[in-house]
Image (cartoon, rainbow, N blue to C red; front, side, top):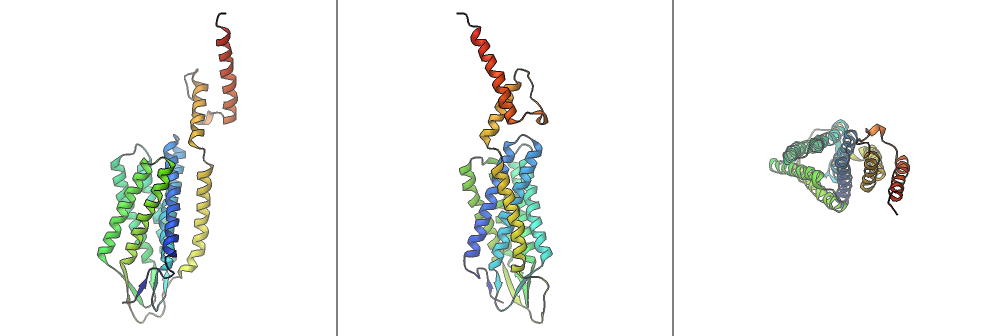
Length: 295
């Protein structure tokens, strides 16, 4: 058996991958919280899609990819199949989206959380081992310990279920900040248990394998993920705060209460228009009531 190193460059790969997972989970939870707050279906779908991209693409897949930087095998070289690597990224986003949309659309329930957690957990485990299957070891064959594989799948299911439960119940900012590291610990633990399940048996006669080294994949992956992170940060920071949305809803109700109707979304006035109309609508009524009081 060849000697496998999981932390070739020290703990820096563990700390970096964990930090990225925390960031991805935090942005994803913020997006799902925004989805719960919005009454419009189109906006809710958009926020849930962003949450899937953040948790699946950054919190899970990018964490997996960065952790693989520390994976090496003694006296040989490890290459990766670009097609399977890209497929694992798509699987991470797609499977997480299935779970988030199952829970996030319609009325949430514990049954939805459990079903979505099982489906998402199995999908995340499939993503992980698809990424591992992308490895091509020169003069080596990768084998897996079935018990550790089963343990990693079980952790993936539990982690996915807890993550979906967080997306349903967590609303406050301190709770979001506390839940993200917990989610990242589960994701990172699942990944490394799956990695520890792999052993490499030396096989002679392989003069060449197909694939590229991990540093070649690092640059395009960093560019793509960096662009996604910037877009997610912009979307979450530029979204209106809950207080601002509540104020707009209050002004709309005041303006249309006398007509016993609520305007459709497309017909709702802008904030500046609502403030002006509210000023002109409320002040004259107050004056009329004041002048009608007998002296």
